[in-house]
Amino acid sequence: KRVYILSNTTATNANAEKNYAKKGVIKGVDYTDILTSGQYAAEDIQAGKLPIKGNRYYVFGTANFKSTNPIPSLFEGSSYQCVDSLEEADFIYCGIPQLTDENGEKYDSVKISDFAPMVKELAASGKTLVCANPDKRANEGGRFVVRQGSIAELYEELGGKVVYYGKPDPRIFEALIARYCPEVPKDKIVMIGDTCTTDILGAHRAGIEAILTIEGGVTEYLMEKHQNGFAEYLETLPEMARPDEVWSRVSEEPLF
Image (cartoon, rainbow, N blue to C red):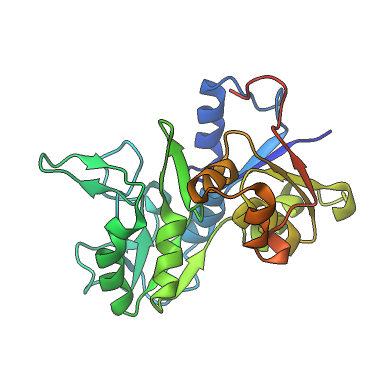
């Protein structure tokens, strides 16, 4: 089978390939190719085609993971200009949601409430938020910390407008198919993922069947957090976010 990785990460395809290779997952050996939400967004950014008026943006959160560069890597070399204040900006870029301790060090949080006052201020500006990683949580050191998708969801709840790049938007599924396997009919494609609200929902929106994996993933975390069984958890989801099939894990051996 051909295996394509469709990832919600702000890393470009090339950088994601390097990150996977460090974990022993090699392009051309373990998978065929990759498309990231970061690559998908970067192509619009570099072409000056974001669906937003104006070219000045304000960064919420940390611009780049494990880097002090204040310019998000997706915007480097583009026609868009990073500004220091929300008032100067035409739109907002959702960076990595992190807090700052008394020593000026950045750290993650598992509580979306920690970011609520800041997001409320952003939403009150009436400016569009660009989210290039719609994942709501990420596993960092065994903790499922808040990520860009949670900020974007809260932003919308507060009345703000969000432009998404990545799952569950069906356009990124269509883009992967058009780029790598346009001759393959959708009934010969299946999405395998651990998150109902991105992997499963996005696949179904694109007309693709979807398999959910449980062990070690976001769904397992959500079930434990809310102390629900799997059937009870599924009942909380819209129909399109429910999988066609469920596996306990994606591989017999450890994935990484």
